[in-house]
Image 1 (cartoon, protein in one colour):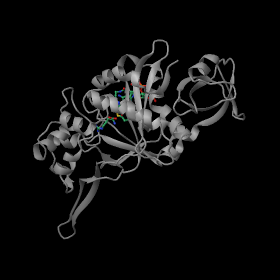
Image 2 (cartoon, rainbow, N blue to C red; image 1 turned 180 degrees about the vertical axis):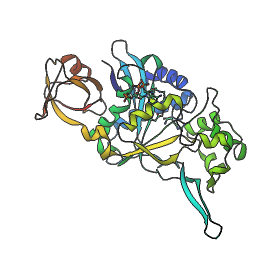
Image 3 (cartoon, rainbow, N blue to C red; image 1 turned 90 degrees about the vertical axis):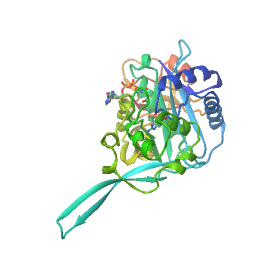
Image 4 (cartoon, rainbow, N blue to C red; image 1 turned 30 degrees about the horizontal axis):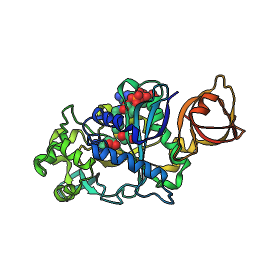
Amino acid sequence: MMVIRPIRAEDYAELYDIAVESGHGFTSLPVNDELLQRKISRSEASFAKQVEKPGDEGYLFVLEDPQTGAVLGTSAIEAAVGLEDAFYHYHLGKVVHTSRALGVYNPVDILTLCNDYTGVSELCTLFLRESSRKQNNGRLLSKFRFLFIAEFRQRFADRVIAEMRGVSDEDGHSPFWKWLQDSFFSVDFPTADYLTGIGQKVFIAELMPKYPIYVSLLSKDAQAVIGKVHEKTRPALALLQSEGFSNTGYVDIFDAGPTVEAKVEHIRTVRGSRRLQVQIGAVTGGQPYMVSNTKLEDFRATWLYLLPDENSDVVIIPQDCADLLQLNSGDWVRIARI
Ligand SMILES: CC(C)(COP(=O)(O)OP(=O)(O)OC[C@H]1O[C@@H](n2cnc3c(N)ncnc32)[C@H](O)[C@@H]1OP(=O)(O)O)[C@@H](O)C(=O)NCCC(=O)NCCSC(=O)CCC(=O)O
Ligand SMILES: NC(=[NH2+])NCCC[C@H](N)C(=O)O
């Protein structure tokens, strides 16, 4: 059994290793000591804070192997984006150029710079170390966040997005950025992505093309990757799609990776989750479920086989799981199918 828990200061060295492993285009984990330290302390403060509505909180979790204490992956939720500084996207829209007299009808795609997602919650920083990409680790690391959101609903907005990493190669070359770089910026993609990750985003407003861009005027290579995800990000996208997330035309301004969104009330795990009271005992058979306790700073989640009764508010949890999630008989848990 693996366990999800809030990140702690002692996890710094492992978070640093994960930042290195996550590679180019992984905006939220730049390889920068001070920034990674700050991410941990901001997360600790967010879990400790009294919150009535979403603000500048960032909740960063890790997946731990309780047998060894090793940190196997990370997963995070930003309560509300774009409240401190502007949060940009391109929106892929259409205009129709038509002339009845000439019998011409030309629908064309355009990209428009916008801040439409200001104030929404964001899922981010999903990373599982290669050797742990097995069993339900990846599913748990992505989906437990919906148990947390359902449990602490007032801490999040009504809409949730995730920016999926777009196409770039091993050396950090992005076909979409290449076009922007040649025409408007002079820095390379890893530099632009790094500056964004450490919060130095002013250059975007200063240098980004302000007027809508006709997609047909971009290089063919740039056009080909609009709305496409990085090969290694396909499983992350599949997991969110299975929860009902979809793309409505918004793409990343640097690598044109798709942003997906869902209303909290429509997210499959949020809708299907149940709050039940714990009875400790043996479980044989059953179905795979995610389970979390209902604590904030001591939040814990895992997955295991359970046999919840549709008509009862009580669920039987085995002792080892109760220990892992810090549960006693009579405590409340939230469960959902994984
Ligand atoms: C995302 C994870 C954690 C997922 O873990 P695993 O790879 O073990 O997942 P998995 O269980 O094997 O696969 C999850 C689901 O994706 C499907 N799947 C696997 N490979 C696929 C592919 N090439 N194309 C389409 N679907 C694919 C599987 O069938 C499965 O669905 P079924 O179970 O239905 O069969 C990992 O791949 C990872 O760390 N990737 C690299 C980092 C990364 O790019 N992270 C996302 C950045 S973007 C971000 O962070 C924002 C998004 C977010 O926070 O959620
Ligand atoms: N299009 C992008 N590169 N967006 C960033 C993707 C990575 C991921 N959302 C993160 O937390 O960093």
